[in-house]
Image 1 (cartoon, rainbow, N blue to C red):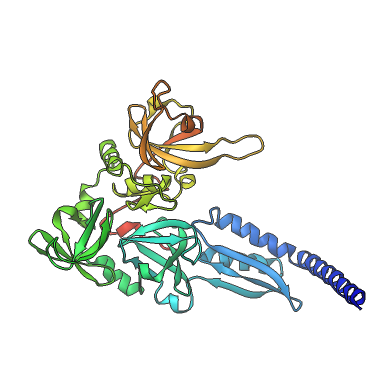
Image 2 (cartoon, helix red, strand yellow):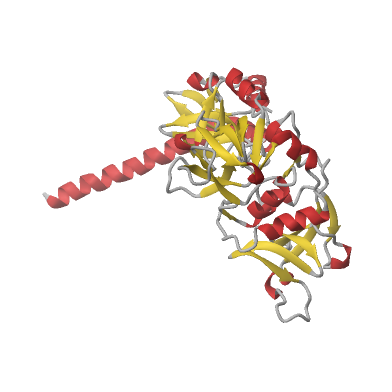
Length: 405
């Protein structure tokens, strides 16, 4: 009996494998042209999946071709539909242009805590992809449980839990953006329930936090968080946003001073705030506090600005230049940018690796950084008018972007 049962199971398993193979071959034969068009559209409109969403697939069900997926790119979705129609490919359209449903009316959000952790997947256990500080406007694309897929002003896509954001309609966002603002300029600090530093703390604050200003009371500003929470902030730890914008000058001296103010900050994968930074989060924070929004990752930042050097001719460099490190391209492998630091002069650069510290390219120095010297790729100079960066302005808080572009 056992042999009989084993034989039946074995035959069933073989039949299942054969059936599965037949279905796979049928799917590939029928959908190959559709799959090819999907791939072409994705390659055209989404060269970097970190900043654009186009998750589309095709498959067969009950003899019918289904094209299904999500995207925040109208042009890409329209192009896909047009190309499929032009090839006379009949399909069931299950494409979703985000945001949709209830999020169409609340497709905006503003970070309402000092630092929001934004993750690669909708779970607290997921990888930390990036961070956004209080006051940062976000585009909301998708909702899963307590998590929202958002796009930051630098177009980065990742998930944030509802505790870190205040959802807003278009009109609510417009009202909030037009309210008078205050920016916290100290590296660390707190807000209080009363105009006294002996009062109850409302929350912690970090450099770059933006809140609404209500009034002044002695040596304090009365403010409101994006959530409406009232608080008081010391005047000597913050600036009126318009005044801060006017004072911005991403000069060599200011960039170096900002970088040094973060010395010793711990390395944090995905960190972009004074609570912790990774290498590109550090350079991003330096430039943000001087009015320029850089792309998120080192492999994105390397495409910004002007090429200065690629031969270790460090005499060409000026403070503020970004040095990129990684694996050089070979006949069989492509270049891989994995690290970035900022030049501060005197054969030194500052970067986040373990913590924020200064390294030297001087091969005769006792503290010569041989490891990074050997993996040096190139240096780029960030120009305020570069198309890859966003220049902050009084009228366009954080360079707010349209996720549909």
